[in-house]
Amino acid sequence: MANFILNNPDVIVTNFSNSELLNMAKNANRYANYKLETVFLRGKAATIDGLSTWILNEEDIKNVHEMLSTR
Image 1 (cartoon, rainbow, N blue to C red):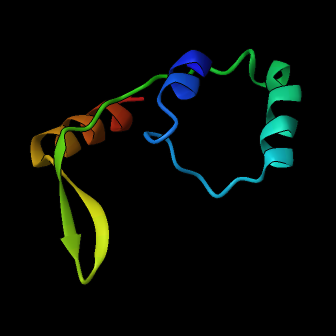
Image 2 (cartoon, rainbow, N blue to C red; image 1 turned 90 degrees about the horizontal axis):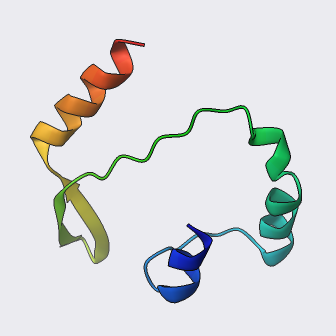
Image 3 (cartoon, helix red, strand yellow; image 1 turned 60 degrees about the vertical axis):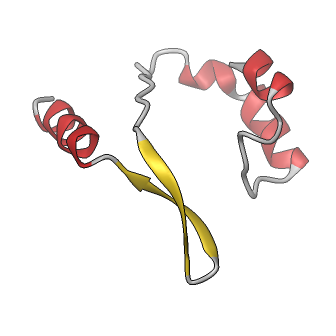
């Protein structure tokens, strides 16, 4: 994941400061027992009232909702 972020700096946008990112990296071992999953949601880019946004695919939303409610 780190390589992806380094190779694609325009893809990931956050409002975390450098020090906050470093603190998260330093504390990464605390998250070692967490089960993390990545889910990609299809959609399309749109501009609404001058704001850039991502309109999610309705089927993907339903699938994620089902996935989370069965846990």
